[in-house]
Length: 330
Image (cartoon, rainbow, N blue to C red; front, side, top):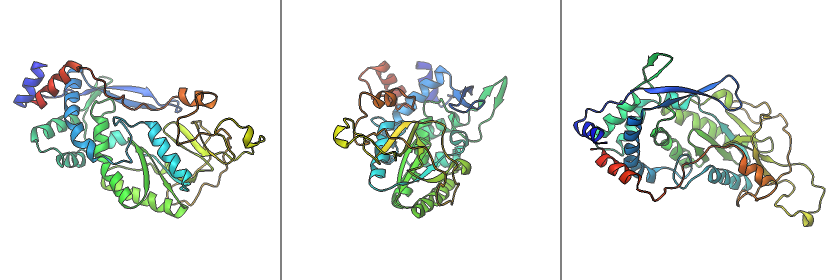
């Protein structure tokens, strides 16, 4: 710790390349996501940097952003989407970004960072981390773009880069819900959804981020869409019991949220009006405004795999808050 603090003070600290570690993608056999694992020494420095940057940028993040923020979770994002659907916004822009963490534009990111950080040493430190590169299979790979998945500061940097997108979509009146690089927009009509998708394309292009055209669609909620590990759609099957005898929150025509399965119908790409393929219907209900029930389907919802949010802050010393964040980064 003393050595790291001294190097930061003397501006001689140089991060090492991260180690590449491929992990298989869920539900995509043969495809891998490459994590970038920093050394312990570099992780300590990144944690100290995160401790200093988080209080600066957290107040400016948009309400539409839920990913890797304290006090916010996937459940909060799903509830927001559910409330909007129940309010009549049944047309969905279901979008995907192409290799987001691997394609982050360093200069655009540093420009946004400079709007909240005036200390040139901190900006040089972040730039050195971004440019450190990676190694794997006995080779060293330079880093012209991207921020490594697995880095302590990468989630915060991704939120900083995408905050202008959140703001612009809100100013245009669109109901965006974003968790890191995963996002959807709920709309009142197919025309509004197409306009929202075109606007998202333009804004993200200015930020150096590319939308995956083959995985982006406009779809009505009755056909269903996937978000944060859940399949969301309207249940259309007829119920054979009178409502007075149904003890759960299940009702005919209600919206359901189930663990995602690979049963999506074919979909239209950018500019398409609607998805004409018919999906299967479910009649298990979930009330988006409340906690899932504790029995029956509730057990499935609670035990299904899904992305994890950061845990709430615990009142522990954590090595004197990492030695006062390495004396405020020396």
